[in-house]
Image (tube, rainbow, N blue to C red; front, side, top):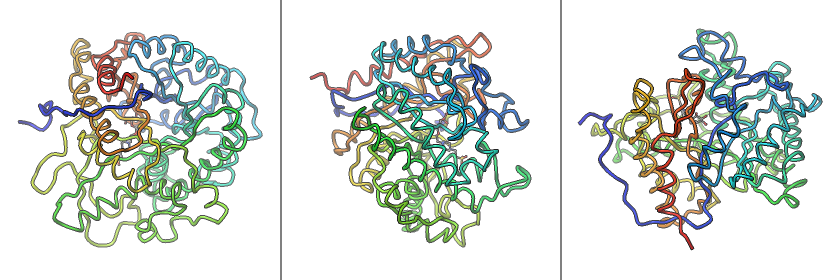
Length: 491
Ligand code: GBH
């Protein structure tokens, strides 16, 4: 058996999910909308980054993507046909405030686009779950003061943007997410440089940047900006509008490479602290994890007392984005100055040579449903049983893009993935007593997979990019609804 075959092992469980469980699919504006100049939209750092030659593997960009800006009705029909009751999507800040800042003009046309979209979703019986920022920071703010690098300016501008949105349609949305995956904005944008704005110490990739300090500054800014937006919501809107607000963090589970080596066991735990703990420890406990402070010293910013008061307790719920699983092996010696995982190797095989899961189109993603249940348990324990929403989970398929359309539509591997992960979710709820209230799979549509371009597909719907962005539901588009139909209690 090769490691890329569809696993024969089915995840079997008699667990269930509660009657009022929210489920559906997720997207992000830059990945699906296209229409980068429509109705007065300004440029984001992703509009700029994707037009720099060499940044995106296949030389593409999000200028058209799925053309969803012009096809909201079609996307809503698609959602309805899956049976979903929830849709998670993100707002384009630069459609709403083209230059981004608190003294810059608001673009009424951009704002009204989303007001109408939210109304149309409700009319279709679908509950909106809205992310304020999924990585597409206004380039105006990056140019003006370095964007996330300037904590005070950025936090004020994000707070203002959030208030503009809450004022315009806060009464229509009950689920708010401040940031999607601040880890990615910090590490991939300011260290690895695979994401906008592409800063790094590696001078072969960028003339500017310092991987040893900037990601930690950026992460700190994002935490402060998150908590200020939450404060605005709680002080000015929550009572009237009755919604909840939180941040979505990303990370895959981490298992020791050698379960008998305490150093690998520690390293696996440390990897979770460096991904989830970096943001969740401040939000739940008002401080960074000790392991991070120990390794990073004063490169990790300190919280002022005022900041601690803001950040601590700033989640009504915990949003989780998780995909695969990894084996973790500790590294010997001192960590490199640009290390961001906690001095360890992230591997796909353990000491015995077992693969953590089957191969996909994404080098970083090998699925393992049991690992997902373990992750939910790790987070639940560490953060004292908060309310969770799984805001992203899904998979690419090895070689999917190279197949003819009829074969792409028969995505049994993705169906296997969802059966396993949703089964693990049901076990976490029923058997482990974890308070999980919703799940949105990634993604409703094949879409612009950031620096990987269009080759890597995550959709339950095939999008024909050469054929006018026509949508064709894959087998998984129906499978997910059947899985939830099986688990969600009827009475
Ligand atoms: C999500 O991130 C994004 O929110 C979504 O927009 C995206 O389309 C989806 O995943 C699928 O990729 O090898 O060191 O560069 C998932 C979290 C974290 C997964 C970074 C890829 C690469 C780490 N991502 N990870 S590295």
